[in-house]
Each structure stands twice: as structure tokens, then as C-alpha cells.
Length: 185
Image (cartoon, rainbow, N blue to C red; front, side, top):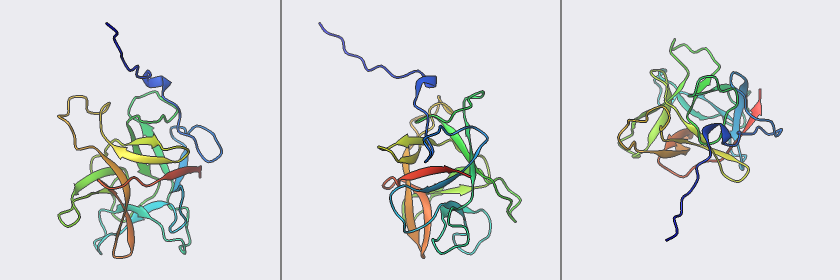
């Protein structure tokens, strides 16, 4: 009788996420998150979704804006002591910006939107832990907390993609994954 098993790489063996220069992303270093294969909008930034200033949503900067790279972020692995950002590992993402909201700019999963059925990525409140997945030279974000919440009962995992609403490009879960690349700020 043959026994077949799939070996999972040890956590520290997961490949590093690479920036556009081919260098591993590092903890505490600022990066821009840019579209991986399209040029219809710029990098990720804080977006006012519906006229209410706080909290801000995560979305794409218009190409015609003064800051087409968006707002820089810092990645922090869930596992303390890690200095390299690795693929498919839990991490937090935080914009490096001050806002009028006087709240955290760390990303978190918002409530499900009743109109779209999707969950927007917002700032303020308790941060959520995301993952960066490799999709053949570009990357996508997903949410499926396994390291940060090993006792969670089957979370509703999802890939992050762009949802267009009132000409605003917002990052939301539960749709097609959107490809990104990372450039050191």
C-alpha cells in the first residue's frame, strides 16, 4: 500500500515576496503597492468611499492624480522576529499616513456590503491579517487567517480585487483577485 502525502514547507521556508527590483520585501520598510498588469489606475491609497470622511477605505489612486504611486505601506509579519515578508503568510498592512480621522491606518476586513455581497478593506479599528500570494510574477492579497487565528471556525476566506463604485476603485474581498507588484518607496 502506497502512502502519499503533500509536504508543506516550513514557515521560514516559504519564498520571499519580491519587489520590482527582485529584492525581498522587508519588515518596517515602506513600499508602494502598484497594479501588476494594468495601467487604468495608480497605486493603493486611502479613499473616501461615500462622502463620510472616516473610516477610509483602501482603493486605487486615479492615474491623473498628483500621487500616482498611491500611499506607502509597511508590512508586518504576524510571526514576531521575522524580517522578510514571505508568500502566503499572515501579515498586517498599514498605510504610512496621518489622517483627519485620528485612527489607525492599518487594513482590516469590513462588514459585508448588502448591495454587492463583498467585504471592503477599510482602515481604523483592529487590524486584520492578510496574505500575499504569488500568481506567476505578480502578487495578490487574500484574507484567510490561519497563523493569526488558529482556533477560528472556518473563516470565510477571500481574495482581494478591485470593485468600481461611483468611479472609485475600491479593494474588496470575495471577487476576482487583482494583481499587484511592490516598489520600494
